[in-house]
Image (cartoon, rainbow, N blue to C red):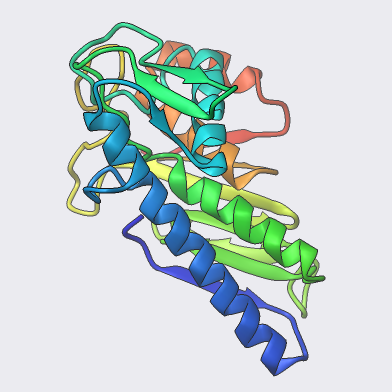
Length: 244
């Protein structure tokens, strides 16, 4: 996922705290190896190069199910197959009875950018909740952040973004930012035109789910102005903010 993960949480037991950090690290590394298409023997790389079906683990199969659902809900502007040369959709077929998947053709390519960090944050949030942690700040690369519960000296976690200097007040909620690279390069692809989207410096989406925030920030950044409100209207409780 090529980003720094920072965890801040309230726990009086030092041994348990260290154990939680180790579990979170293993979880993220495991998911990164599954989702990274650049790792030659990762399941995603194998799916991209196979001529037929590939058996997938539970997380990756579930992720592909979610991705196809949200591609439809965002008018196709969230698309893990955006880098494909073949624009026919769906780009892959799922076989639930065997937990297998197959690309629809040689011109398709799966890339989980705009998805994997949000998915990992939800996994960590679930892990912490199962271990009795109620108050925590989970920061993945300063672009996807979750606030569980509240700050020990306040009613929420106040997080100031690097891009745009916007402050988010997080209480059992999250935000995600998508946009240009730090060098000002457009790198998010509009799946419909196959060209880099150029929608200003950034888009931020805040709401309950870190995964949905990341999906929506990617989708609305890629979408033209006339489609953004229509996409967001389908997701009650989520708010988009645009940089200028």
